[in-house]
Amino acid sequence: MTLRELGRSVGNAVFQRVGRAASKVQETRPLPADLLESDDAYLVVFDAPGATGSDVQVRFADGAVLVRLDRFREFHEGFGMVFPGRGMSLDGRVELPPDGEVDANAASATLTDSGTLEVRVPKETQSAEA
Image 1 (cartoon, rainbow, N blue to C red):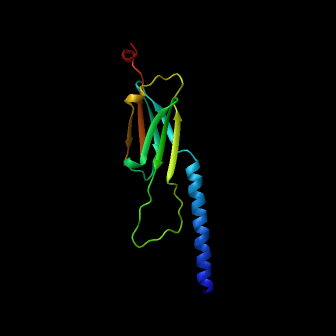
Image 2: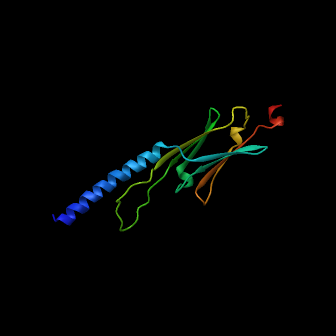
Image 3: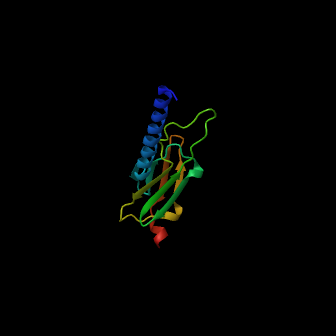
């Protein structure tokens, strides 16, 4: 093994470890999200880069919108992994205001082309409570 090959081998090992650490850090942080409110609904917008519809799970529990993304790293013909830096399993949680009465069964989720997940949770209407 030449000195150049040894250097390349050590460099690749370092890149892989740094990449794995970076992806683990990304997986422990919650997905960035915004909470918006209108007269009739709450809208939670999560960053969902690289996700597809089959990657996304959305739940409502204990007054919060919970999201899990299980992304897949696509294979690229002729390329090998040097730096695996993207987290593959990402979670997010947004608490809705405690005084907000919502109809979680009527909630909807939309994955946009721009890489966001929009979860719309309608507020309870007076007629639904009667």
